[in-house]
Image (cartoon, rainbow, N blue to C red; front, side, top):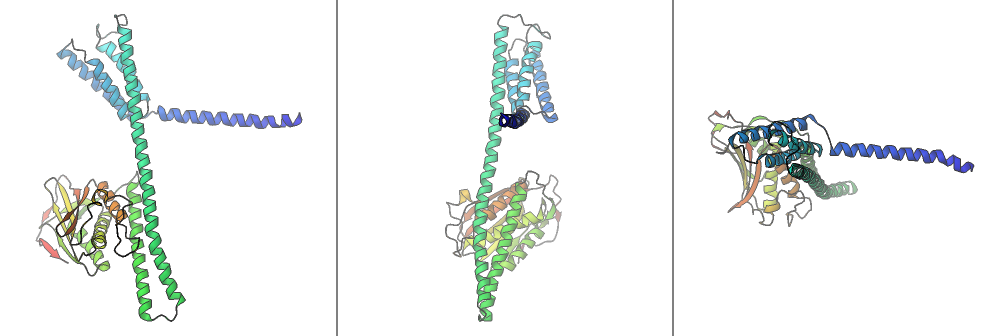
Length: 393
């Protein structure tokens, strides 16, 4: 008996905790289904106001037309689509029934519930409106859930890609440094060769980490690009200068307009895009010996940048999936698993899209070409200069 009484407080405590948790979950679910925000209130009020004004205008043109009901069903559909949760769609449905009765059912500007067939017709209208609201809101929630699942899948693909790419150069670095430390009798030439390999692998790892940080930055919901007007020839020259240090055997040429072309961009990210495209052209072009970079203003108000190589081109099977995270070259030219074009090109695509631009790729008779376009400001501040049309670096 004493043992029974001793366990009762624990049971009461457990029951109270369960009750509190249940209430908390109920409040959370209600807040999710029926949220309130000033934005949704303004959107709902604006849509209803436009619907009423539009119906009044149509009523003056043709008083006998029964247009109010479909207009307010459309109003419910728009409200449910543009607001969050179920509340505003249901609110719009109820208010739509009241508005149709008051403004657009004879006698006008008065409530009348005695008309023959009125309760059934307006109950049907209310049911259609409520069902429309619920289905539209549910579809919106499913779309949001599908987008979240897509983000999770992309992050998982990115993690697998980066994990595979980082493991191989790290293994190479450990092997090279171990060979130097464990073999004191190595010649100076062999030591230098091993340390050069370590340096190259470390530089590749740095570029991979930079790409990963850019993907994380661009993928953030609160991304703010540091966009400013930049002269395109300076951005191209900076990217080529860095590439020449890594790729001394490649011949680079740059072509820019005769007039100074200023483009709003985040220069660090755009330089990274150009560096990724250049490295991709050399590694996956396999036989690439020359790369031509060009910038020009298009007729539709964009600044177009192109990276053109004389390599073997892109496999037609890879073109539709070229900007996926996990794509891999069918036969890595160096025999290692780290030469993955997917991460670098996905970074390029994400950066260009964040700028409001587009990125495409295609083959030409002598190799492959990547073109990305960035939107120009409404007023083009291009200044005429004496720059040469083409410069070879």
